[in-house]
Length: 135
Image (tube, rainbow, N blue to C red; front, side, top):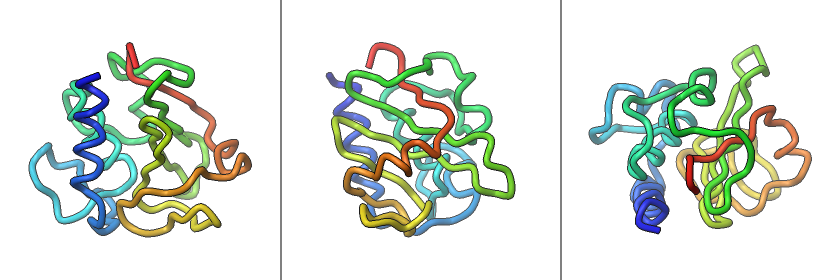
């Protein structure tokens, strides 16, 4: 769909941006870098979702964001980790993207990047699985 393509285009355009805590939360314009939720917010906004950038805590309650895995887009959101370990990643059409996060055999741990299929243990560390409505 055009929404999925817009999200892929946005995600790919941000590849290589450094991880910056709080990055992506000042609006939709160009940013020096992105934290995990700022990046996922920008991607969702490109697809027509989100009126403002969200963090891991507020994302699940946004209009147009629904519980469960999506057919084309799935968001893995860790909202209850405490100690600064909250995190969010996104799977668009089978390609995972993240900014920051833990390093594993699948990649990760840097700025905005494509990562390989994460381990099931990593995916299980996210307490919320979400998707954009209709996707």
